[in-house]
Image 1 (cartoon, rainbow, N blue to C red):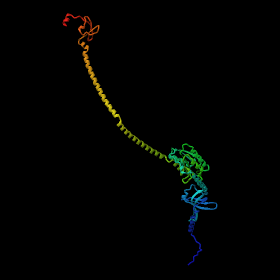
Image 2 (tube, one colour):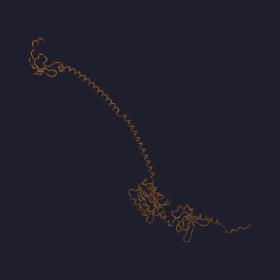
Image 3 (tube, rainbow, N blue to C red):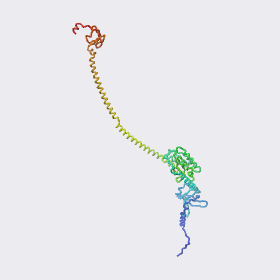
Image 4 (cartoon, rainbow, N blue to C red):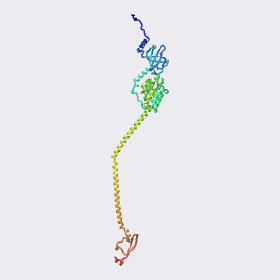
Amino acid sequence: MEGFDFFQPIVFTVTALNAYLRELLETDEVLQNLWVRGEISNFSQPRSGHLYFTLKDSESAMRCVMWKPSAMRLRFTPTDGMLVEAHGAMSIYPAQGQVQLYVDALRPAGEGALYQEFLRLRAQLEAEGLFDPSHKRPLPRLPKHIGVVTSATGAALHDILQTLNRRLPTLRVTVAPTPVQGVEAPAGIIAALKRLNSLPDLDLIILARGGGSIEDLWAFNDEGVARAIFASRYPVISGVGHETDFTIADFVADLRAPTPTGAAELATPITKEELRAALQSAEAQLTELINRQLEDLKQALQLAQSELRRTSPRLRILNNIQRLDELQGRLERAIQQQLQRKQNYLANAGDRLASLNPQAVLKRGYAIITDQATGKIISHTRQAVPWQPVWLQVQDGSIPAQITPPTKENKKDD
């Protein structure tokens, strides 16, 4: 039996050693959550979308890998010579025994200090209540006039105007141009907000710019800009950067949009198509309501007419008119009868009068004797005076005559 040498050193295989080193690296809390500053070199991005590069300073270098999901979240394009800060965890690439930094976040150097300032200002303004939801104002559903604060030459303005025109062509837009990057940007943004707030008929304001690094967007983390947004008399929509970008302006604004285009969409919740459909629906509802009211009024009118016919004096008036016609007919017949009787009586009286008319007697050859002096009729012989002048009235006139004394023959005849 061979003896065992307790002092013989342990011999690792390469694989075992790499596994041991990997375990050491991945169980170290410091090495699993660290930031490393350095200059990029040997940068490459194959078709896979992963990033491979080296971080170096004046004395050392470190191989780095950034997988595609993390690389897609970058807000800038890394290039050789760029000074950056990389966050990640240390491990080993067993195939080559290469210790590497597996990067999950990358930012240009200097963003760390800016981010700390961002956190400080956000905490301060939040404590003052500038982010309180109770201060958020509702947006109008159908704005007529919108103000836009952004760069006059940036793509954000083009996207906003194009989106507003597509969704609601009747909208009036007033642009207050301002720098949105650099040392002059905060003062320019504040002045633009004041100009728009001086307008009497604005409905809301869009504050926007395209994406960029934290330095590019820093004007929207300015305390003065934040207070100007909070003091705005009109609601403000913040559409700054990309969806993953957050600024102080986003927290103070009445509504945050992920992009400038998104801000224009949120500003016009009702599009022209929806407005047309709403108007058509309202027209149909109004038509139906009017028709229903007209039908109700028609039925009410019919009921009123029926009740009016039932209680109306018209029938009694018509009956009285008929009665009046009957009475008038009876009166006319009575008058006719009375008139006929009078006419008959008159005719009989005329006949009697005619029979008594002396003219009729005269026509039969008789004559009327009247005293020429007195005009009295001499109807008896005792009224006659001899030689008395008389008139003999015959049918067609009077004949003068004289009464002669009677002779003996005449007396005999008498």
